[in-house]
Length: 171
Length: 312
Image (cartoon, rainbow over all chains, first blue to last red):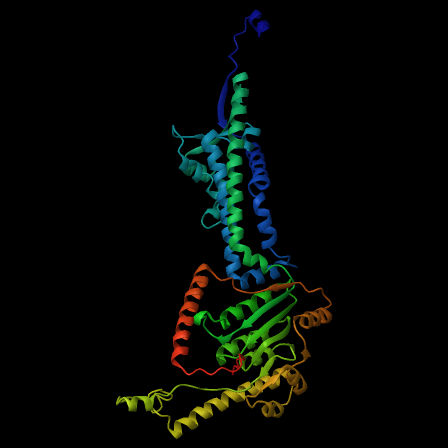
């Protein structure tokens, strides 16, 4: 910098600006979160799942068995719903409290609310895709499409919740 | 830069705190769910299903005075569950029943015939009438030499109060549309014609019973008709008559399956765990039953048969 001054050059000061987070960073952060959820949050459910799912030879065998045991299928649905709620709480509470999840901290990206004070509903709505029931499952297809084809790289749930995932760019 | 580092450290601390709280919630939730799923889990273990058929066989689950009953929807459901479970290789029906309703019996017998698994009927104290009908649907029947079995027959029985009404000068007013609409009414004496019709109905039912047993056991219908006098047989006698295959108990039933399928049997009992309401209901109805029984005994001239109860 001193050399520049000596030479009489007036360069703009080093600055940062906030922009949409890079898609690969978001993807890796999400995968890191999934890993943590799987290892920590779903760990107590391992015993249930191991016992609950019998060893089947093929998919048709499994389908026949589950179709014949409606009550059992209902119980498994409850278990998966509880697990999904836990995952939703993980994302919503972390993002509400610190605007980041461990995955996002690792990749230096964060969630920003379009309105001044981010409300809890915004962080719940932006993570609704985790709930494995209709119509939220449709977001598994719609959200990535929005992510790739909008200028701000926002998922539909992000647009609806008035939030965006950003990162700092240094200039 | 230092501020940023501390900020990042603080975020990690908060994230870890949240993660710990969520882990505790997850642990409690999984424990809570596993309590409710224990029955489902239990049914996943083992390769030989044991389905108990105890008490009177009926189509609805009435818990009359806390007495054990075998309701066909539950039993058929268990048979279908075992049939669809690829881990289950055979089904043992633990039968201790004096008989029951024909439709409920037919529902269970048909479900047994539909299953692709190896089926063994293990008759314990009693497997008579409908209990035997169900047993005959299985591939093999195992019974103790002292089990009570047979009683291939059908009965209609009811109390008739027409004499009592007459004694008290009470008249039974009979308004019917349809000649036999009040056939079997306890308030009037059964006519000879009605008796014949009811007998015809019973004979037909008896015929179904005989043909089913004959088909199931692979014996000539005439042979079963000879045995179908409604007579009960001891297990040993029943074996001699061809109504039972093997004399023994649980060990023999299990051994039979292990030998036939070349497996090491791990038994899993298919039964409905009683809910809190069932337990309370059972206690109250038992209390009421014994109160009623006590009053009844004091009013009746009860005969004691050296402590042995004979059931028919």
